Length: 319
Image (tube, rainbow, N blue to C red):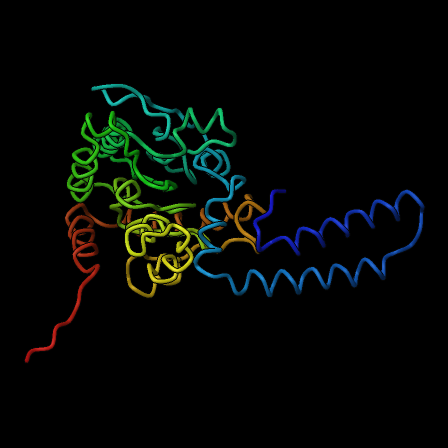
């Protein structure tokens, strides 16, 4: 498994344990007591490391190339998935997955950013950075979901919307702005989960939901730490400092009232046990879905509107 810089001692110890197990098996030697001590040492090292992660380290975990992506969660959580393509204006954006599926016996519309596992697939998926046609495709699916009375389940995982000239020429800002406006009025439950990166308007373009969940090691921010560092300090190397001040971790966002829940991850991150992570996502999404399906349309839309109006609320003292 690929390791991050701060995980190097853990990876090295795991490798030593595997080598010792292989040696004991080949030589038919009982090394159980030595292995037990090493495994206890490994467990302690993991707890110290992953129990005290900095915001920047969590950003690194959120970007881990082996982390589960939207299609992985669809495969683990849903059945009968049928993907829809195209925005009916320009073309199909493979960085945005859209379709219909069955989640815990309920038919749903499912939307999410999709990254690639290797260079070839990342080029195909545009590194998870959607074009305007991706956001228009997502809105088309949400409008179809409303027409047929289906709840919408969303997975957010993008460093940001694609900022290229072509995307700007085809109305990137307008496509995202339109989604923000229209999602407030979609008359069916919408549940969004940030599964990795939640960067800027690219994330918010499909993030106006009745319930917003963020995985424990994911982040949700107005800008990437590198972008923030470049603007504030003219130095991208200040990204760890930017991650600290941006308050982009799930715990910070929950405290600030920006999100509704933090979804636990296995020790070390979602990529270490995708099945366990998916089970946690299933519990969170399923719980909100049951509650939201009981609400009438007016209550649902009024609550969604008030939810976002309250974000960023401040109190001013009168002189």
